[in-house]
Image 1 (cartoon, rainbow, N blue to C red):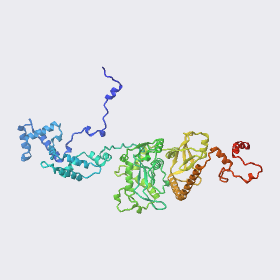
Image 2: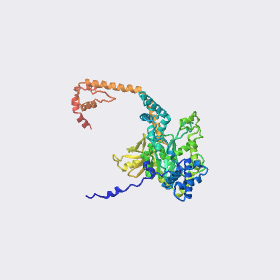
Image 3: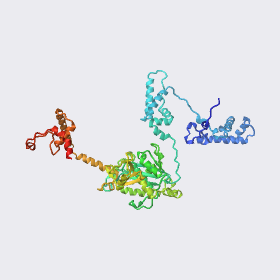
Length: 617
């Protein structure tokens, strides 16, 4: 029978392309044979002396390499120095090795470096060494001396019951040398964990350098090692968080955001907007010597795995702007080295001389108390940070004098200028970078964080476009620094409508989302503290007791009337808070004053109630 062949047969027989050298395992690697330079100097000199001797004999020898031919030549060459004269057989062996190695000088190196005892001198103690090794390979990371002590104690106890042929104990030096000769990676895994072991021993690939500005941009957060003061109260506020964006090609700073709020989508969005828009330094507050021309739409934004970078708002906004987001693997900050290195430069070159500097390492702090020595106000720091970035860092060369950041930016800008946003695109991008949320459209507009948003334009929209259960939920964008208005996406109109807050007291003017939440929290706490909890509890218990009394009274009653009938009686008796509270009718003075009038019959009145009401209407 012929073998079945189809279009897949050929593809399975094709060999896979060879992997790049950096991904080949050691066992599969092709090693180049060692050369003479890999040996110690004294062995290299001896090998070269052998080569020179063979070369001289080769020139003077006219026949074969025999004792008759070689002895006269050796006697002549080593006349007066017979101690160093080699035997003719030794010279023949050297020449043979040299020829068989195709002229490799390493073949003339003495093999003395391979001499030595390569077998264990002691036997029977391997089991105890393995036990001690298990104690050494522990996450608590005991010392070698501790493992060796256990090794000695275990053998000593075992030898107590042995008369002849006791188990020998190797020295600490031999024990330590045996530990050091073990493969380092499994030891690191057992003592420090796989993550640390991979950090120490894994292959570290180099970054593919970008070829133009804004091709690759890195962003990250860090708490600054500096305590700042409140602008007016001059009280220490603690360490602020810095969100920074750096261009990899030029190493220029594109934008930043400084805040005391923990890193979040808001801080990332503010820094991105600052990086993309042109920088106006007129409102910085101080006069700078240079401009800050670094801005534009970047191609790839490299982020880590922080929750703020996995935000849907950030993903949607960057996609709309044509920005690709690249996520670094978890706990691998070295794959984002440029912004990490810049944080170190800030601490080393900018914060060092400012009083109030803290230390990342508690051991470096000693007796220094930064909160007592802090002197710089927050706004002053922002001004001086602008000066350091624009007039110092951008204008100075790096530590190796290979580039000046601003010159590298200008060079890249002249060759391949980046894309820039129009005024309309910037306005749209500012809206897109807001916090995304979903709210229900009601007759009163939208409600967000206890604030109402409505406008005549939104009212006109409700009049013209009917809403269903699904479409009544709208996507809104909130600027966390300004709650005076929101932007609502209206699908029928194909865009975002700006809707102001209906507050007329001026409360939302310049109000941020964080401030609003703090105010609400304080207000709730104030209301809770002002309540008379004891009086409320007594009143609720009194109501509960009264209800129980009414229940008991009802259970004792023998009246079994239907609810509609009782309701009619209540209407007839005019039960209200200004009238009486029972349907039982008393003989009134009015009724007794009417002569020859029989006492009203409640059943007859109820039967004719509906007819009387209809006739009255």
